[in-house]
Amino acid sequence: MGIRINDTAPDFTAESTAGTIRFHDWLGDGYAIIFSHPRDFTPVCTTEFGAVAQLAPEWAKRKTKVIGVSVDSVPDHRRHLAHRVEGL
Image (cartoon, rainbow, N blue to C red; front, top):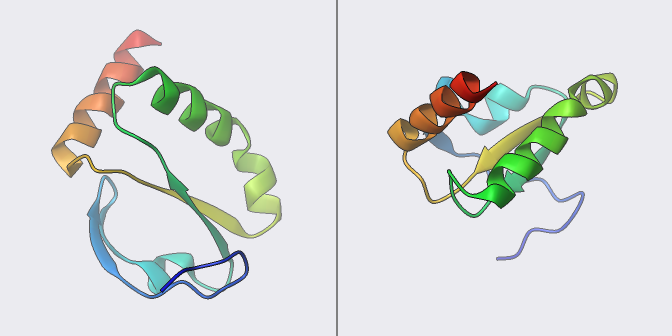
C-alpha cells in the first residue's frame, strides 16, 4: 500500500523521544508531515532536521506537526539529541 500526499496515514503506536505516541491521537485535528531521514549522526540528518525545526512557527500556523522517522532506536535518538545540544 502506498501513501500519497493528502492521504490519511494509517494509525500506529510507536516509542519516541517524547514517550509512547499513538499517531492519530498525537496529531489531533491538524495535519502531519512524516519526515524520514537516513540515520542519526550523519551530516544530512543534522542539516535537514535543523532546516525543518527552523520552520516550526510556520508549521504551527498551519496546524501541522512534523514527526521524524528513521531506522535508529529511541536510545540512539536521545544520544544524538544530547550530542547536538552539547555542540550548540
